[in-house]
Image (cartoon, rainbow, N blue to C red; front, side, top):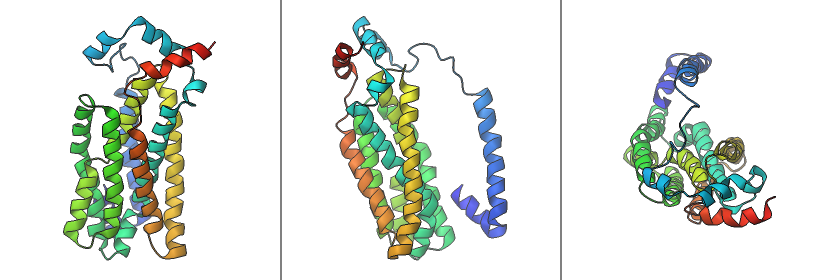
Length: 266
């Protein structure tokens, strides 16, 4: 969409482009919400067969005793929330300032938009691969790899000097661009069970949006104050690397984590 919108702004006005995008967005998402998404998934539909067979009565009892107020105070939730904060910080920053940043570094508007567009295009394949890997490998390792590679990608975007370097950097970033959202949700389900995953993920995702607000403001303020994009994009890279580090310390399951909680909960 980024190159398409760039062409639309060039041919039409940005106001017309924005209205047109809003119409297309509504036409696609509203029918999807009404006619495709379902709430009546059968029990354990999100578990693999071996995971279902491994469950036992004690695990179920422990997870059902956990309350939302207790879950949000545990270290795994805070680590996942920190990762989503870094994710939102980087995503919104690139969406708002990616093309202007590349143009300030000497690329023309179309080349800049194609570079950003490559991220979304490659992410189609990358998301499918990450989804398959998340069913075969520890999800915390995949989440850490996503944040780590994306963090390096933000440094690369600041340093690229040619079209080839730009397209290579954005293609690499695209492979890990869209996986953190789904894997964070899956990790919350692994650790806390599916009963609380909706409210826990919604709460953690609030940090994602707050981070997006901060990074969008910081991108403009940092450039106006210091004349460089390193303030905002460098901050995004550091946050992503921090998110990678804390993700590696997430538990693989919630069995050990939840057991002590049952003693203190009424």
